[in-house]
Every structure is written in structure tokens, then in C-alpha cells.
Image (cartoon, rainbow, N blue to C red; front, side, top):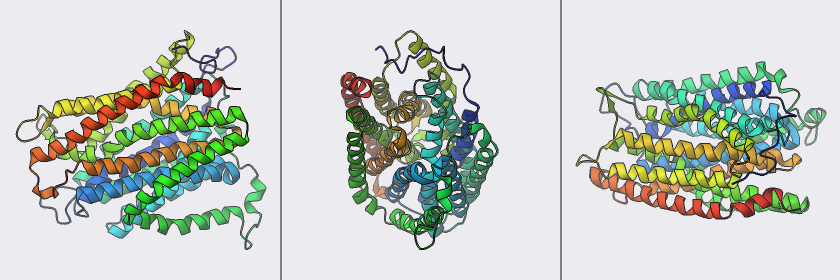
Length: 510
């Protein structure tokens, strides 16, 4: 399908190289993702590990949670991690600016990782709360800052976001291999502590290279930050106090994670309706552009609710039902979470070049078509895994090649959707709403993690976990995964059929 004019603008008026600030943000995000995925690779395994290990040489005592309970905490954490960027993006747009928000978020996340290194159940919930708040300030604003490096019609924009996305995945690849292996094989809390070291490295890199950002990301009114506004307190102090007060509430939501079920549906609906109302107040064109943004967010909800099984149900599937022996050595369960980012590193540049090449010959698929391709592939990945599991013997063990093929399809789907979605949000958002719209993109991911938690709980089967045979457990996974594959393909078809209307909403309605 021919692309729109914004995707095919000539390069004559643009530099051929990427702006230097991109590489500052690339490495800052690399180390932040190292910390995030290092902790993520261990969390589900740590919670479900027995309090008194029966084998020597593992990660040590865990929390002894059932898989269902561990899924609940993991996905509630994931939901809040991606919900707080809605507030963090708004705070940056209206008050802090992107740079200050990124620094505050990084400090909170570093604190969270180091608290996670304390071997105590209560410390885990406080640590997860700090990580959720820190990610709220960090994640949407570093992506928004990438968008600020380019003009709207700069043909380097999509390629720049794909390069940035590759940086995310370099960190995500290293984290399970380093933090995951040390945590799983030596001590859980050493792995969590290493994640904190990675966060500090990312912060140091960002501060050292901030001059290369060419003035982008400063507070909208720097003098207002220190001007007293309430009880003699300045806005920056109110933000800090408010953040510290919210931390115990976030910890409570994670502990009583069933509450998140009652929050996510109305929160997401209210936010998306608010985006449409604000767009309508800015005129017909802004309304339709934000309507398309919301539609793309809904597509991403489906994609990420399936994709993010990797950290929960697919991790448990890998531990119990995948042959992880290679030349007599058993690959750690957490190490297989490095497969997806490894594929990203191998394929990100080829995909970036592909989009640029297709743009030059006026054959670049529109953004909605790319989304439909992403959904199609995440569904196909599950069907491939189900096919491989059908060949498992009486021990219910699936050859590793099948989960590697599944992750390959999930990765190619991700490259069609995620970096393109980041770029689309910064293009579709009105200038004074970029942080808020980017927060909405991550709120959609939060909603997806919430839905993903409900899905993960279905894979445990219904019987008490200890009462199931290996084949019954395997059937619990494959029945759910087969349904996911078919659902994703149907929604992909709907997205593809509606792509001309969505494309017109982006650029054609005046």
C-alpha cells in the first residue's frame, strides 16, 4: 500500500545522519532497560520459588507463592509500571520538562532496585512501588525527548525511533544473561542489586551527554519550579512529596492486586475519552488524529497482552515444559528471555532500512497496516508453539526450537508495531500534549498487562497446581495459547480492513 506524504518526504532538506542527541538517549535507555529487564527476568521465578529450596546451587529461598499468585503480582506490577507514565508525561509537559522528569524517574528506579536486593517480602512490595513511580517519570519522557529531536516531516524519524528501540533491546538482551543467570543460579538478590547498578550507569550517561540534546526537554517555565504555590512549597517540592506519599499506596495495590482489576477498566476508559474531548476542543483535525491514536492504542492492548506472557505464563511454561539442555548444559529459564531482544538487535536495522527503502519507492505500508502485521505475527507465534507442544512426549517436554520460533514471530511482529507506534504517537499528538499522549500509549500497555494477568491465570488449569499431571499442565497452556493465536489473527484482519479509514483520519480529514 502506498504511504502518505509524511512517510515519504524527500531527504533533500534533511541531514543524512541521525542527531547526536539520539545516541545519548540510546545509551541512557539501554542501561535503564538493563535494570528493568534484569529485575523482570527474576521476579516471577523468585516469587514462585520455595521458601526452603530442596536443591543446592539455586538462587536461594523464594517467597513460595503459587503460580496463580505470582501471575497476579507480576501483572499488577506491569500494569502500574505502564499506568504511571500517564501522570509522568503530564507532569513533564506542564511543569518539569523532559530532562528533569527523566532524572527523577531514574533516581526512584535505582532506589527501587536496591530495595529489591533486601531479602524480605515487604521490601519487595516497596521496591516494586518505587519502580512503578520511577518508570512513570522516566519512560514516556525519554521517548518524547527522542521525538523532539526531529521535525514532523523529517524522513529520519521512523528510522531514528527504530535505532532507539534497538538500544532498548541491547539492555533487555544483556539483563537476563547477567542479572537473570546470577540471580537464578547464585542468589536472587545479587541479581536484583546488579539491576540497580545498571540504572545508575544509565543516569550517569544521560547527565554526561545532556549538552548534546540541543536545549530540548527543558522545563516550560524554569523559574516557576521554585516559586511557592501551596503552603509555602514550590511545585518541584510538591511533586517530590506527592511521589513519596503515593509510594505506600502503590505498594498496597501490588499486595492486594485484585484491586487493580477494579481500577484499570474505568481508568483506561476515562483517559481515552479525555483524549478525544481535548482533541475536539482543538478542532476537527486534532480530534481525528487523536481518535486514530486511541485506535492504535487499542490495537497495542491486544498485542502486548499476548506478548507480555513472556515474563509470566511463558516463563513458567519454559521452566516446566521446554527441553533447555544444550550439549549437556541446562540453559537457565531466565536466560531464554534474552532471545527476543537478541532477535531485535539482529533485525532492527534491517527493518529500519526496509521501511526507508519502501518509502523511497512509495510502497511503505501505512501505520495501521504495520499494526495489523504485528498482530498477525504475535498470533502466529502462539499457533507455532501449540504445534510444537503437540509433539511433546509423555513427559510433556517441548523441544526448544519451537519456543525460539515463537519468539522470532513475536519479535518481527513487535518491530512492525512498537517502534512505529512510538513514532506515531509523537506525530499525532498536538504540540502541547506530546507527553500526555505518550503517557496514554504506555497506559494502553498497562491495560494490556492487566488483561495479560487474567490470561496468565487461565493457563494454570483450574485444578490445584500440585494435583495436575505434567500432560494436564501442558494442555492448560496450549488450550489458552491456541485461542490467543486465533483471536489475534481475527483482530489483525479487522485492523487491516479499517486501515484506509484510519489513514484518512491521520492526514486526510480537514
